[in-house]
Image (cartoon, rainbow, N blue to C red; front, side, top):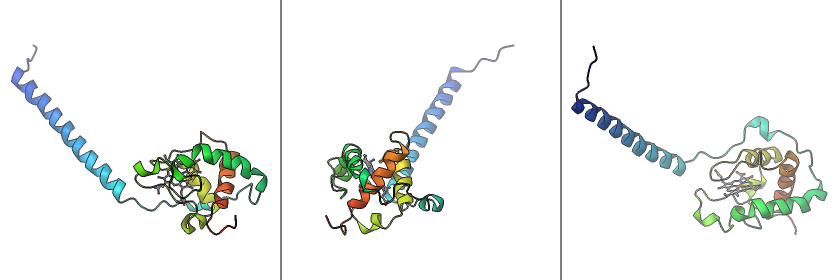
Length: 150
Ligand code: HEC
């Protein structure tokens, strides 16, 4: 024997689903906003911080690094790495200031890990750039330090 659902029952059933979906959406959105506003500081894992830069001190890669930086990073971080690229105004959180003491105090391994992984709104460059290109960028970021004589 077939049990027929009363049309009214399915109406309440559907309404229940819609209400749940709305609640999940509303709470979900609020939770995401809260996370965006109070983000934990971005810290690279200890093992990543300790990874040695295979191109450490190699100035011959700086020209390549600059080209990569200008094309990929400057739109957000600015040509001088001050975090003031044309896209920066619309971003939250703001792009890091690569010339700052905070960034310059990070190890090469930590910078490499961060630019490889990315963190919203910054994309991950692990698949977009080779390991060598990413280390070249680390070397280039070192030249952006405010304390480096130009
Ligand atoms: C869409 C904008 C955007 C682009 C493009 C971008 N970044 Fe970022 N970057 C950010 C933002 C925003 C942060 C801060 C993220 C945070 O603190 O959570 C950041 C942070 C960083 C940091 C971490 C600094 C620190 O010490 O905490 C590094 C390193 C970095 N970016 C390097 C790069 C490099 C290299 C490129 C280009 C290959 C690049 N970024 C491209 C937006 C961007």
